[in-house]
Every structure is written in C-alpha cells, then in structure tokens.
Image 1 (cartoon, rainbow, N blue to C red):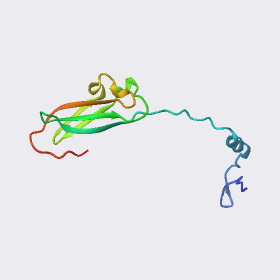
Image 2: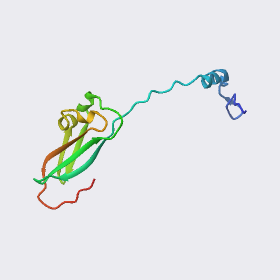
Image 3: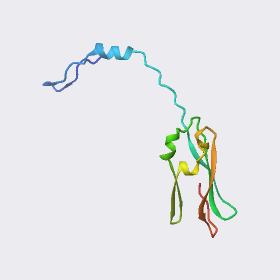
Image 4: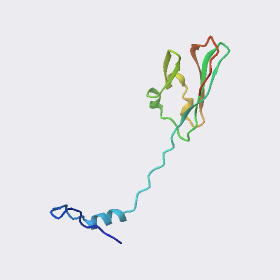
Length: 122
C-alpha cells in the first residue's frame, strides 16, 4: 500500500500534511443506499394527419414512474410546422392526467391544417 502523507511543490513550498485517520474513517463508513426513484419518460409515439389534414400526435409515458400533478403546469410540448410554432402546456393536452401513470397515453389534434403533401420526420 502506498500512502501519500505530504504534497510538496519544490523544496520550499509545502502543503499541510494530510489527515490519514480522517480519510480512513470516511472510507470505512458504510454507504447508505440511495432510494430508487422510478421516473416518467414521455415520448411522442406517433405523428399523423387526421381526416381533416390536421397534425395529430400521441404522447406516451414509457417510464416506470408517475408524473407528479404539479409538474403538469411546468411541462410543455412544442410543435413547429414551417413558420407556425405552438407551445402546448401538458395540462391542456392531458386534462385527465392520463400520462401521470406508467403506460398512460394521450392523442391530441392540433389546429394546424396541412394543405399540401409533406414529409413527417419523427
């Protein structure tokens, strides 16, 4: 075992000796296990045009955790099409809090109507 009890810079500059007892005590302390927190994971599963050529999408909670209800006012979905940008609060998209549970999903149809052929990139 190699122990460094002093660190020096040249012959004249020395730093204070290390307190090895304190370091050994800290190493020997049993670590407390961290609590496991299951987290939600929201993903856009599908984007399509409905029968009226409006952009629609499905969002699903693929995580193993639940969404805390006060988070609904802090999470937003941003939808962009050409020059149209719309930000939807999660609380508006999911008023019944279906996404709050693992496996929960919602579908939403935007007000954006497409009048020409477009490629969807997801």
